[in-house]
Image (cartoon, rainbow, N blue to C red; front, side, top):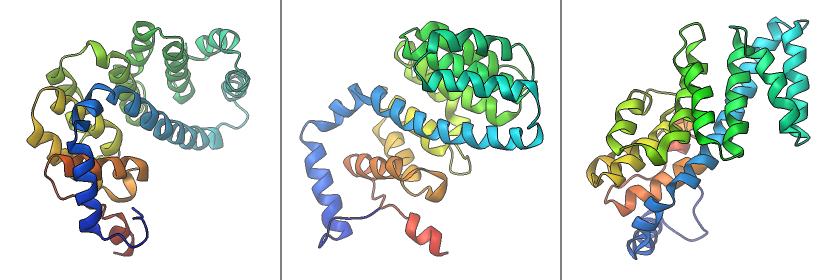
Length: 234
């Protein structure tokens, strides 16, 4: 993480710590849903694009690929009402396009403030063993985002703890959700520990998430300077 010119790691941490200790920690906890949504959307869009490109390379002439492309163009053109029925047709199958179509349906419903309907779409993917694990993990995180405000902190922790570990490619997104749940439950020690792991997650965690984790870990008394540059060198 790049520091301001002339600022040392220790100075930066001290400044962050002082700033956030002035009644910012509870503010972050109360407004964390928005932070999570932004970070998760960025990562999930990137992952979806990667999964789609991998699948599409194997089925460039597939009818579903063409249908999915057409539905996504409607989404890009802000024609969600037209895209939803097209996505529903694709979602009736059991391949990667179907999983992505259901996740896209859920995302569109979430944008329409239909959290319950969105969660149902994500649950269909997360709980279906016919879909490959990356799709299921993505859907589980999105499901948790949709249901977060209605869930008890321990339920969030239990659901996502397996994805919020240093060896998981979902450390950043799932980790933020779990850490926020620890904060909500009043468990500052576990929240700080997890933020520290996220901060030092290297390339598997987006830089914006690492930066936030460094700051929040510092607030919670954990020295978690972003080690991503060192990780790249090694």
